[in-house]
Structures are given as C-alpha cells and as structure tokens.
Length: 282
Length: 296
Image 1 (tube, rainbow over the protein chains, first blue to last red):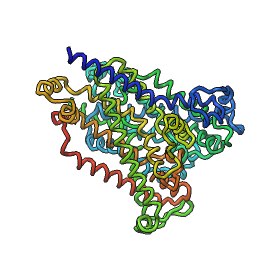
Image 2: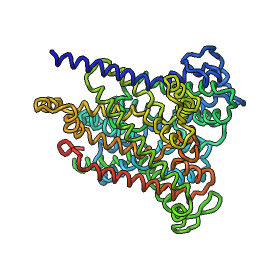
Image 3: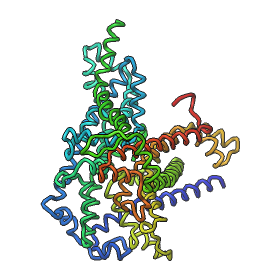
Image 4: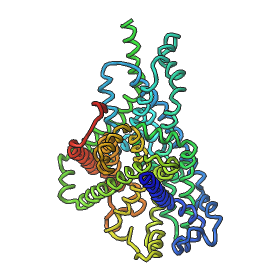
C-alpha cells in the first residue's frame, strides 16, 4: 500500500515536472506570437504576455515589405525552391534504395559503405568546390544548386531510411509480380511504392522542413532580392528595419514558421516514425 | 535460371546510377578538389596557383582569428552537446514511465526542433535575450539582476548553446524509441536483485541504449561543428568575436573575401577536427559499449 502511494506521488511529481518543462519550452513561441501584435515600446518595455494596445496591421505591413517585392514573392520563391527539392528527393532516394535493397550485384557492399559514409561528410568541406562548379555552370542565383544534387540522390540519409523500409517488406509480393510479368521498374512503381507511402511521406516532410529552414546555402547561392527565399528575406528585414518596425519582423517570423507547424500537426506520426527509423538531424 | 537471375540483378546498377553520378559529381569531386585548393592561392578571378603548405602555415602562425574561431567552436560543441543529449535522455526517461498524456508531452517537447536552424528562431532568440528582453525582465521581477546574455563575451556563447539545447526534441524521440526496446524482464530481474533506480540506469538502461546514444552524439558533433545561422543572425560573431564560430570564419574567407584556397584549407582543418573528435569519443567510450547479440 505504501509502495502504491509512493508510485502515485512519483507520477504526480513527474506530471508537474513535465508540465513545467513543456511550458518553458513553448513559452518563447507563444511570446513571439503575441509580441507580433505589440507596439515596439511594449516589446521591450513590458513583461505582460498579452499586448495592451494590440496593433493589428503588423502582418499586413510586414507582408508588403519596403520595396516592390513583398513577402508574397518570398513565399512563392521558397515554394519554388522547396517543392522540386522535395519531389526529387523522394523519387531519387527511393529508386536508389530500391536498387540497394532488392538486387545483388558485385561491389554492392562497397557502394553501400560509401553511401553510408557520405552521411558523415560535412557540408563545409564540399561547399567551396560546389560553389565554384555551379558558378562555372552559370547556376548561381537560381534554385538549381539545391535541386540538381538531390535529383542525383545526394541524400544518403533518406536513401538509408528507405532501404530500411524496403528491407521490412516481404519479397513475396515482388516475386509474385515478377512471375506475373512485371518488369523490375513496374515492381518498384506499382508494387513497392504504394506500400512504402509512410516512408515516402516521412522523407518528404523532413526534406520540406530542412529545405524551408535552410539559411546557409541560400545565403551562398542566391544573391538577388527578387529570388530570395523567406530565410534570406527575414534576415534582410532584420538588418534593414529601422527601430520602428520590430513588430513587423516578429510577425513575418511567425508567418515563416506556419508551414512547418501545419505540416507537423497534420503528419505527426510520420515525424515520429521518420526519426525513429534513424533521423537525427535538427 | 541462374544466368537469368544474374542479369536481373545487374539491373541494380541502373537504379544506383543516379546516386553514382551524384556521388562522383557533387560529393567526391568537391571533396578531392577542396583538398587540392587548400594547397593553392585562389581567388575566383584567377586560376589556382600551387603554394604548398602556405595556407596551413598562415593559419597556424599568423591568423589569430583562426584560433579564436577554433576555440569558440570547440567550446560551443563541448557546451551544447552534453546539455542537449543530457536533457533529451532525461526527458525521454521520464516519458518512458508509462504515464498518461505521453503523446501530448512528446509533441510539446518536440515542437522547437521542427524549426531547426531557421532564421525566425534566431530572431526570436535575439529578442528574448537582448539586454532589455523578455528573459531579463522575467528575471528582474523575481529579483534577479539582468544578465548580459548577448552583450558580454562571457555569456554570449552560452546563450547560443541554449538555442541548440532548446531543440533537443529529435534526440529525445530517438531515445524514447530505443528505451521502449529494452526488454521488460531485465528491469524485473534488477528489481528482484534489489537494484535501485540509479544502479538500474547504469547497469541496464544505459548499456542497452548505447548504440543509439553514440549515433546521436556522432551526428550532433558533425552538425554542431558546422553551426552557422544562430551565430550569424543573433550576434554576427560578436561581441568581441566571442561567438565567431568556425563556420563564420569559413564563410568570411570564402564568400566575403573570396579567398577560396585559404577557405578550403580551413574546411579541411574543420573536417580533421570533426574526425578527431569522433575518434576520441569512440576510443573513450569503447569500454562501455554493449551491442546486443553482435547486432548493429
């Protein structure tokens, strides 16, 4: 009995601790949201969470930006960068993973080891020659430096994730389809793809969020404001803003977090599965 | 039949072809040429001129900022990773207690991780921790004096580390998944043997999750050594270069001054440091590793 009471106290203690922790974790984001409606004086001057004199036009004004280029353009740019990247990631990684998981050819082990070791290749070491290469090809200030490498499956993390998934699928389906006369590509496209939707979704979601958040590569490859994705636009607003417009910067920061948040809440299970199958980044 | 199988299998190369091309063009070629460039003097307009070890000599003997950046980065890695991994493991263990509402907690703790190295989150950090910012005002109301989170060189790197620690969610989810794999009967056996909580943790939990723990730490080391966004957006390396991380140094040399040869040399030093850190870490922890049934 005493033991039972002890476990109950323990559980309550854990709940209190967890709730407190969760509050500390989330509070900055709540603060960011409410502060985007505050006057600048209040952002710095007041400790209360809710704005005392809500400013409702921060979003409209921030969206309009300062020049002819609005956040509408920046959003469109970001989607033009992110969506092809995501699509090519899913297609190329799953094709390559299919090759690794379902065929036995010479040097497969070696190639697999090479592929896995590129997981640990730091971006910093290859960024300069890549930049020079894209410069020579005339691809700077376009989204090709993001899209082409993933189209050629430079995404070891997602390949690995999908190999793991394919390995979990029984080969009997493949064999049945082959006997029925399916080519290897038909097996991939018609039999396996529908079965590994969860893995494809996980990969798509992670790649979407990583590319959406990516700042370093955009900073290097994109140099005209017209083509800025949101990450660069935000940083520009932060630099350019005269002291009067902080609330607009905060408002646009909130907006930039919206797609990721929506994706997270609508596809939470895929996040957990994706991470559990080996995701570590971020 | 056998021959038939073999032709079928060699189709595998075809599926690997995109990756083979991509690997050669966008990974192997850049890796080798950055090593070559590191021995040259090279700005974008001129072609590379071989200068032997000069870049490395300059770096180590007459570039004080190199040492600053290296020192800051090592400090940043040593500060942020133990905190991040520690929190992630601690929270995962609490969540593994079969309490109600675990999914909600997991969600809430995970949310900051989705925003990763985004600029928005860096902006948030800047506003939270600036001298008149929200954190200091909260501290003031409970009677603690303001802390120069971003304006003092003694605190700035710690404040940046906090941003990384805040995003412990993805490590946590991974730990949680591996904690669930630990067989229940091991805990029962420990209970019968009269082992306490702490003893159970070190004798059972920790050894069972070491593969995941190591993988986690390894990936965090690789990422932390290259962290850029926070230091660039929040403090831009300041104050007094106290947050001038290696990635910022690399960025400046390569894309502000266009010294591609020197920057390549820097990137190789970073690479060697990452490998070195990883090697030391694995050496150090080899003794405690446990791999279940020769797996993994």
